[in-house]
Image 1 (cartoon, rainbow, N blue to C red):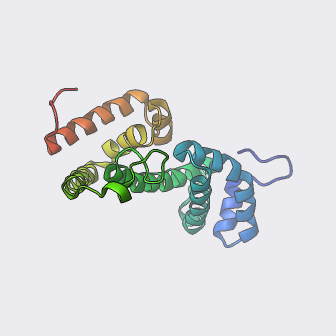
Image 2 (spheres, helix red, strand yellow; image 1 turned 90 degrees about the horizontal axis):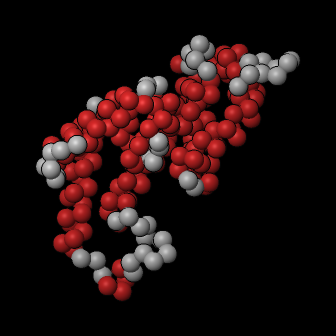
Length: 194
């Protein structure tokens, strides 16, 4: 974000904040919290979760200010931190989604397990599939894992994923294809096609 006349730019504020100037960091937070909230909200879809992500992102940014490169736009650096927080949340939700199915246990119309009781065999099978999937995703190299998580688990468009990762849309498409192919091979699920 460009500073208004008479205001310091982000790089100068970040430099001062890295030197321990808390008011400089507070100014950065005020300047960027709205845009960061909008980014997180679009990413996670839940305002409360987005607020938590913004707070966690600023805490992490404060701790990492010494590693900030002023040649890089501060909002981009801050969004990268928030993206990691969103990814962490996405992984936690993936676990829940795979264990509970597509619906949250609190969602309207979700199965009432208190009435029927869970099927232990189905739960064990689901937990085993989840563990295999998590292990397989964890084995993927970051360049394949990140576009897969963004596009399939976080519902980013390929263009949005490309922008966040700093690569072309074609690169995202290719990496997602390779990640899916590798997961299919490792998990032995379904045909080996596209």
